[in-house]
Length: 129
Image (tube, rainbow, N blue to C red; front, side, top):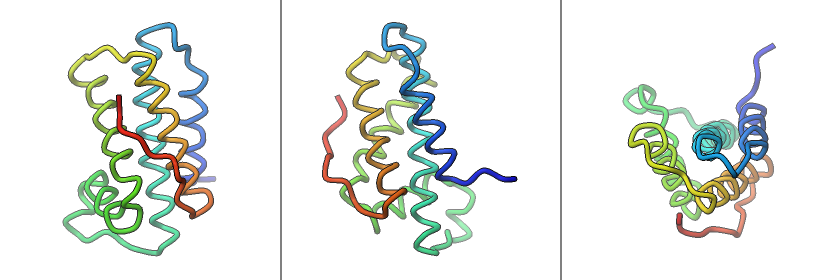
């Protein structure tokens, strides 16, 4: 049986919350996991709206997710972009992730997961540290 986007988002979010905040590599994996939780949360919410990506955007799921968020979840678009930035910094720029970034990322991904689960926009939005 195939896993759904919302199930994968929940698994990624739970994995991130379970990682220790004391170890640098665990914090880096946490922000990576919660970004992918956000990716699956947005895709689940988008599927609920029955919107299909254009052929051009179909090749880049991140671009499609961002386009969908700008149109349907503008309040959370900055959170999604912040999660993507933190994840890319941990993966490609080898920047150390501190506890505040990890905690911020887990909370923001939780907001996006809430959007996907309930279809309602959460109220909590803040800038990335």
